[in-house]
Length: 300
Image (cartoon, rainbow, N blue to C red; front, side, top):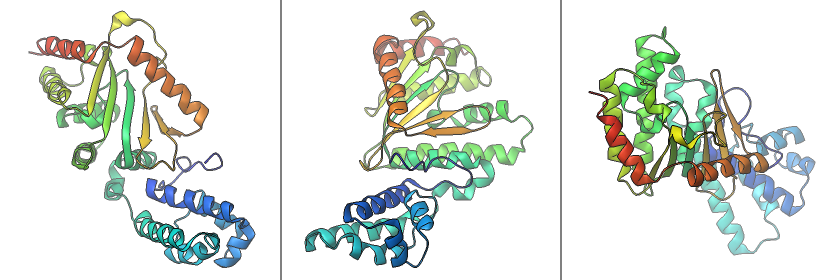
């Protein structure tokens, strides 16, 4: 997928399923030896439109899939043609449906929508968090306090809708048949610089202690005593998707926007930093729990 960067650009980003469908159509076209010009003629459009469909820049119309697949699969066995066609037609039916977050567009920036799609399709999420508890683990009061820090003049209704988005993200991660594996690194600074009052922090620490026991969640503390480390350039998250069609994606956020990286070399650098921090700088899960139990006593 080196020639397609579906997570970048302006406007509403595609869902992961649309990216998968677009990628698979492009792969099948190339394997069948069909040129962009030939594919365009089959669906009565331009080669540029076909290229943009394969980059997930355009929605893939069901009729396009139905018209292209017989030509892309002509040299496959009957069994393969039937299986691939059924899979891609089903995927096409899902791919162009708006994500659940579409009704909350007024409460979040457009560049956040790929993140929510990645979460929905992820099998593993790993993250480094230097300043805040990550949104997928926040209590409502903590989320509200953090949002108000960044947007103190925002209307109360907008803040509450943004809080609701974070709670829905948590519910969806928990509802999945196989829960998403979470491996999250938290700087000690997350607890040294309170978000909200003591009650907000106490309840947030209680929430982390509750989650600590869940098999699919690993929390590790990076204490001040560990010194400098490879990830000290800012927060980021890495998403490994349930589908093996797409590579891992890294999400990096700053004050004004979020960025998505899927270049294999870049992703490998971020993954290596996570591995080094988890193995050489962070304390064990048990030591992390001990720290949380200790720090909770400070929020009285």
